[in-house]
Length: 121
Image 1: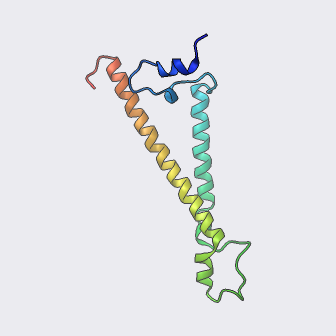
Image 2 (image 1 turned 120 degrees about the vertical axis):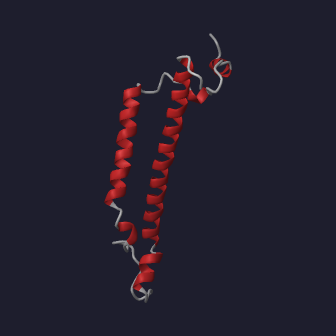
Protein backbone atom coordinates (compact mmCIF):
# COMPACT_ATOMS: atom_id res chain seq x y z
CA UNK A 1 0.00 0.00 0.00
CA UNK A 2 1.25 3.49 -0.86
CA UNK A 3 2.13 5.85 1.97
CA UNK A 4 -0.62 8.57 1.91
CA UNK A 5 1.85 11.32 2.80
CA UNK A 6 3.90 10.49 -0.31
CA UNK A 7 0.78 10.59 -2.48
CA UNK A 8 -0.09 14.06 -1.18
CA UNK A 9 3.44 15.36 -1.82
CA UNK A 10 3.39 13.90 -5.32
CA UNK A 11 0.10 15.53 -6.28
CA UNK A 12 0.89 16.81 -9.79
CA UNK A 13 -1.42 19.80 -10.28
CA UNK A 14 0.11 23.26 -10.08
CA UNK A 15 -1.48 25.57 -7.54
CA UNK A 16 -3.44 22.81 -5.79
CA UNK A 17 -2.13 22.14 -2.32
CA UNK A 18 -2.73 19.00 -0.31
CA UNK A 19 -5.10 20.80 2.07
CA UNK A 20 -7.16 21.99 -0.90
CA UNK A 21 -7.92 18.48 -2.10
CA UNK A 22 -11.16 16.75 -1.28
CA UNK A 23 -10.90 14.25 1.54
CA UNK A 24 -13.06 11.15 2.04
CA UNK A 25 -14.29 12.42 5.42
CA UNK A 26 -15.67 15.71 4.05
CA UNK A 27 -19.43 15.91 3.57
CA UNK A 28 -20.89 16.11 0.09
CA UNK A 29 -20.93 19.57 -1.51
CA UNK A 30 -24.66 20.30 -0.95
CA UNK A 31 -24.24 19.49 2.75
CA UNK A 32 -21.20 21.80 2.97
CA UNK A 33 -23.13 24.61 1.28
CA UNK A 34 -26.16 24.16 3.57
CA UNK A 35 -23.90 24.09 6.65
CA UNK A 36 -22.06 27.24 5.57
CA UNK A 37 -25.30 29.07 4.77
CA UNK A 38 -26.85 28.03 8.09
CA UNK A 39 -23.79 29.21 10.03
CA UNK A 40 -23.64 32.58 8.27
CA UNK A 41 -27.36 33.13 8.83
CA UNK A 42 -26.96 32.06 12.47
CA UNK A 43 -24.13 34.53 13.06
CA UNK A 44 -26.09 37.29 11.29
CA UNK A 45 -29.14 36.55 13.44
CA UNK A 46 -27.06 36.59 16.63
CA UNK A 47 -25.46 39.89 15.61
CA UNK A 48 -28.86 41.40 14.90
CA UNK A 49 -30.28 40.29 18.23
CA UNK A 50 -27.52 41.95 20.29
CA UNK A 51 -26.79 44.95 18.09
CA UNK A 52 -28.23 47.48 20.57
CA UNK A 53 -26.84 45.69 23.63
CA UNK A 54 -23.23 46.41 22.64
CA UNK A 55 -23.79 50.06 23.56
CA UNK A 56 -25.70 49.47 26.80
CA UNK A 57 -24.72 48.68 30.35
CA UNK A 58 -24.62 44.96 31.12
CA UNK A 59 -27.71 43.75 32.97
CA UNK A 60 -25.70 41.72 35.47
CA UNK A 61 -22.31 42.09 37.04
CA UNK A 62 -22.18 45.87 36.75
CA UNK A 63 -20.03 47.89 39.04
CA UNK A 64 -21.56 49.19 42.21
CA UNK A 65 -22.96 52.71 42.14
CA UNK A 66 -20.88 53.44 45.23
CA UNK A 67 -17.69 52.68 43.29
CA UNK A 68 -18.54 54.59 40.10
CA UNK A 69 -19.87 58.10 40.27
CA UNK A 70 -20.06 58.48 36.48
CA UNK A 71 -22.89 56.40 34.95
CA UNK A 72 -21.66 57.08 31.40
CA UNK A 73 -18.19 55.94 32.35
CA UNK A 74 -19.71 52.84 33.92
CA UNK A 75 -21.34 51.94 30.61
CA UNK A 76 -18.28 52.79 28.53
CA UNK A 77 -15.82 50.89 30.72
CA UNK A 78 -18.06 47.95 31.58
CA UNK A 79 -16.00 44.80 30.92
CA UNK A 80 -19.03 42.70 29.94
CA UNK A 81 -20.15 45.31 27.42
CA UNK A 82 -16.62 45.56 26.07
CA UNK A 83 -16.42 41.75 25.73
CA UNK A 84 -19.74 41.70 23.85
CA UNK A 85 -18.55 44.47 21.55
CA UNK A 86 -15.27 42.63 20.88
CA UNK A 87 -17.16 39.41 20.08
CA UNK A 88 -19.42 41.30 17.68
CA UNK A 89 -16.49 42.92 15.88
CA UNK A 90 -14.82 39.51 15.62
CA UNK A 91 -18.01 37.99 14.16
CA UNK A 92 -18.40 40.81 11.64
CA UNK A 93 -14.77 40.48 10.55
CA UNK A 94 -15.13 36.70 10.25
CA UNK A 95 -18.11 37.10 7.94
CA UNK A 96 -16.17 39.63 5.84
CA UNK A 97 -13.07 37.41 5.61
CA UNK A 98 -15.26 34.47 4.68
CA UNK A 99 -16.92 36.50 1.92
CA UNK A 100 -13.53 37.61 0.60
CA UNK A 101 -12.27 34.01 0.61
CA UNK A 102 -15.37 32.85 -1.27
CA UNK A 103 -14.97 35.64 -3.82
CA UNK A 104 -11.34 34.67 -4.41
CA UNK A 105 -12.31 31.00 -4.68
CA UNK A 106 -14.99 31.82 -7.24
CA UNK A 107 -12.49 33.81 -9.33
CA UNK A 108 -10.01 30.91 -9.22
CA UNK A 109 -12.70 28.44 -10.19
CA UNK A 110 -13.88 30.68 -13.05
CA UNK A 111 -10.30 30.98 -14.36
CA UNK A 112 -9.78 27.21 -14.12
CA UNK A 113 -13.02 26.52 -16.01
CA UNK A 114 -12.07 29.11 -18.62
CA UNK A 115 -8.64 27.49 -19.15
CA UNK A 116 -10.24 24.05 -19.24
CA UNK A 117 -12.68 25.15 -21.92
CA UNK A 118 -9.94 26.65 -24.07
CA UNK A 119 -10.23 30.22 -22.89
CA UNK A 120 -7.32 32.62 -22.67
CA UNK A 121 -7.09 33.27 -18.91
